[in-house]
Image (cartoon, rainbow, N blue to C red; front, top):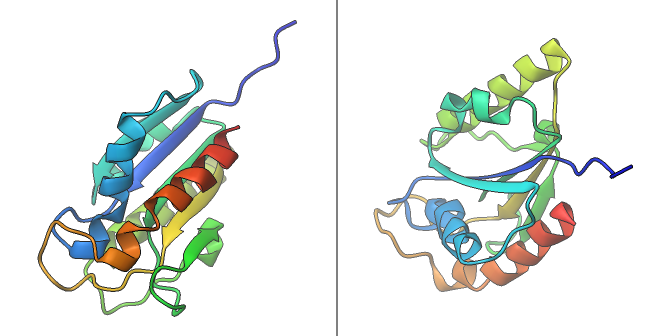
Length: 153
C-alpha cells in the first residue's frame, strides 16, 4: 500500500513594495524555479493570505513564509508556530497577519487544522517603499529555502 504523502502548501506572503516586507515574494521567485515534490504546492499571495482559506483546507501541512519582527537582530532566521507569531501594532502588515491567524483559528475550531510552521527572517527595513531587499535579508534566502526543503521532506 502506498504511503499517504502529506499535502503541503507553502504560502509566501508579504508586501511587494515594502523593502524587506517583500521577503516572501522573493523566496517565491526562487521556489518557482525549483522542482518541488508532487505533494507540495507553492502560492505567492502578497498581503492576501486571509482570502485563500479554501486553498488551505484539506492540507496536512502549511508553511508560511514572511518576515517576523521578533526583536532579534535583522537577518536572524525564524521558525515559529502560529501561537508564537509576534504581532506588534505599529506596522501595516499586522492586519494581514492577524487575518491569517484568524483563518487558522477557524480551522482549529472546525477540527481541520493543518500542521503550521512559520519560516522567515527578522526584517531590517519594512518602512521604506522599495522592491529590493536589504543586503542582510537578501543573503538569507538560500538558508530559508533550505529550511523549507527540510520541512517538506
